[in-house]
Image 1 (spheres, rainbow, N blue to C red):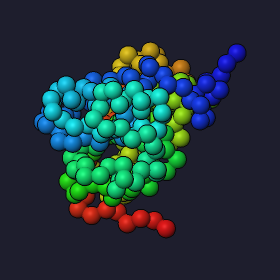
Image 2: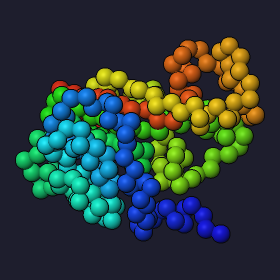
Image 3: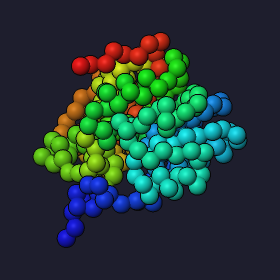
Image 4: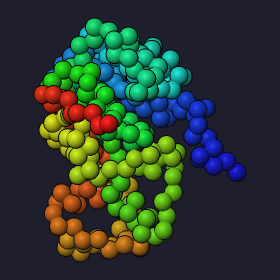
Length: 247
């Protein structure tokens, strides 16, 4: 038997076409005007950057990707790709003369041990007002809460409990993450997936949902959205000055 930690952790984590070349179509609904030069951090094989270029011909997309095989794939579709982690980027060397107008951070922050300092570092590369669009899993979704209430917190190849995730967020803690590191949050949009959550619901009452292991009360429509959201999309801007670095 092969376990998920054996195949998806460590320096030899494979290039997975289902993961690294999966375009984020839903993100394109957040980009309705020419985005200027785009920095796609964690660009994978470049599939989402390619969508941006198709929607806005002539757009320059620069990728940063730590997986060497994925980075090589991305070089075939993006304008420039740096194979490195966020902490290893030297903007003067790796991003010379790039006037970044939009940053994509799609399913990246939850993989980082210290996403706070990573965001501070990214903020230092950006002019005030630069747009940042990030997608981050929501650990407060009802399916995960029900599993936890039943004593299970089982990692998987992908999803909210992807075995490579090291940080977990709710809507409020995600807002704090950005606001504490030099960004103004304009909007946090839940990406709800009823098909993934409804199967765990065994009974509904006004203001309450029951699963086999959990009965949870929600106080507002926003609460209900949180319970059905597997991800959030953060739309933020680089604040007027970077947040001070912690020592």
